[in-house]
Amino acid sequence: MSRYKEFWKNFEQSVLSAKRSIEEIEVIAVSKRKTALDILTVLQEGHLSYGENQLQEVTKKWPELRLQYKNTKLHFIGAVQSKKIVDIVTNCDVIHALDREKLVNIISKLDKSLIAKKDFFVQINTGSEIQKSGVDLSYAEDFIQLCRQQGIHVSGLMCLPPENEQPHKHFQILQSLAKNNHIESLSMGMTNDYDIALKYGSTHIRIGTAIFGERS
Ligand SMILES: *Cc1c(COP(=O)(O)O)cnc(C)c1O
Image 1 (spheres, rainbow, N blue to C red):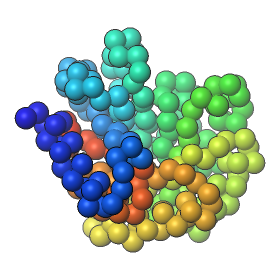
Image 2: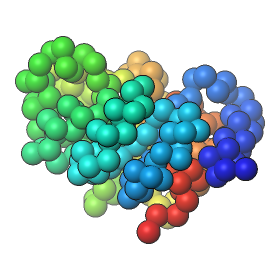
Image 3: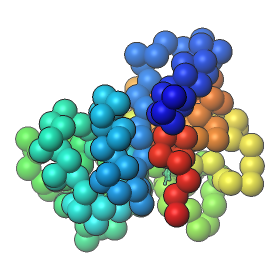
């Protein structure tokens, strides 16, 4: 059985035990630091949703792959530098990590018809970690309001729990923040904790290792 099929079997089990339904969850195959050839094997399995965290990798690998596989959806899951935000929005379908006013200001000045085709998620620093990107929890609701005032529809929230902690609390915080602010999607859960994230309502799980193997 391929690694992808193996993952999918486990994923279906996790969906069942979380009492969720599979159609409400998007599996983002995180292909960062993997080659176009690695990605092709997963495309050939019929998988359409991918995630990258570097603009350079997006522009290097994806234009050609997307010529062949036209229905792929590309998620930008990394930290966003303001000088790259326009290219990121142009080249990707979903941006997972809006986390500061400067990005919002730049995006709000882009062509309305371009913005309307994209989905934007706000990254929340649920653990208030100094070194981590994401909007601090205490400022989260104000930031969501700011996005909306600037004409950006916030489709979802995203978080990366601190590595040395159990993720449950963080997933729960994100879930209630989304509920209180009428936000439909939750980008949370990776290879090691997606089964838990599904129990807290995750709609977008970001899976690298379980689909592509260890990264070098
Ligand atoms: C690398 C990465 C992932 C995937 O991690 P795995 O543990 O390999 O599944 C998910 N989300 C983000 C933001 C990442 O940078």
